[in-house]
Length: 338
Ligand SMILES: *[C@@H]1O[C@H](CO)[C@@H](O)[C@H](O)[C@H]1NC(C)=O
Ligand SMILES: *[C@@H]1O[C@H](CO)[C@@H](O)[C@H](O)[C@H]1NC(C)=O
Ligand SMILES: *[C@@H]1O[C@H](CO)[C@@H](O)[C@H](O)[C@H]1NC(C)=O
Ligand SMILES: *[C@@H]1O[C@H](CO)[C@@H](O)[C@H](O)[C@H]1NC(C)=O
Image 1: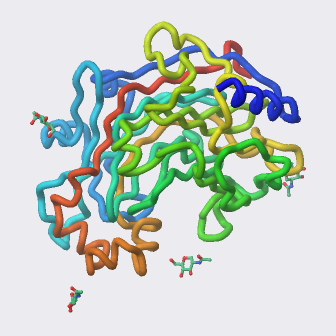
Image 2 (image 1 turned 60 degrees about the vertical axis):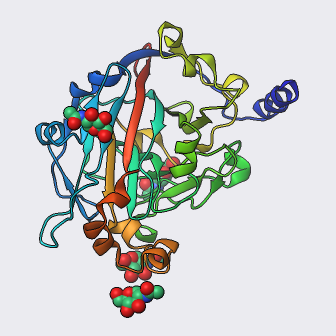
């Protein structure tokens, strides 16, 4: 551990972007708290998934959302065959009624949806829009049997990420650098979490989940951090959901490397031009623009020998792992907002 910290210290000295800031606990949801301050959205999935998002009353009645004092669960229907004429498989999409400009979101997650045809995401979105004005930050996202998480920004034109040499440090691997939604079929500027432990899908779940933190700040830029449940270097203020987590001071000394680092660098991306106050969203769709478009030729297609949509319609029990278990979600904001 000592060697690790020395290594991190050396890295932090080489940072040009070394401003830091204190953030204070502003909002916190545990268990039944989620039934207030969040909206169960029922619109047609904008990403064209084979899904039927249900409202809160229906989700409670069908037990697709439930909570006890410690955990909050959102899941898909895993018992019904879906009629081809129906909108899709019942699932849940919720968004926070509050939006936050500069903030840190800390998610303690025990389980995420996993398996063929699934496309879960925990993300943030401009409450002002219209999309993509004000930006989108995908914190947790993936499809099908993907092994590691991907974090991605989606923006209006003229927001790009600098070359890795200027962008470092991050532990993940840059997938693309143009965040403009009009480029490359809206793939965004993404980072794959290559070196930060089991961050996605069934490997994440078997490890008991873990902790995600997303920093969104004018001075720090945007970062996504991940610590697996069993990591020995989870910062105490991230691990502790109680009074110990009253304030956060993100820095590479105590937090280690972010898995994904999206700096707001002059000449590349200007925070105020592309980002504003974001609400948080959890969703779980099936097939659609990503899980469906990458289905042909995938292991899932080979194993199921079916189209993605038919698979979703006809195999309810295959969705028994398609659920979120949230231990807590905390939001921290700076003392003075600019
Ligand atoms: C909801 O589903 C969970 C998980 O299957 C189960 O433990 C719980 O008893 C169910 N609640 C109701 C009211 O059916
Ligand atoms: C973009 O999506 C369309 C429709 O799904 C597809 O035909 C096309 O090949 C995609 N282009 C790229 C560059 O991926
Ligand atoms: C793009 O953004 C940079 C700052 O990041 C700015 O210097 C430049 O003028 C912008 N270009 C356009 C066309 O908006
Ligand atoms: C795959 O499905 C097609 C038709 O749905 C069937 O003809 C074929 O035999 C199946 N292949 C395997 C390996 O099961």
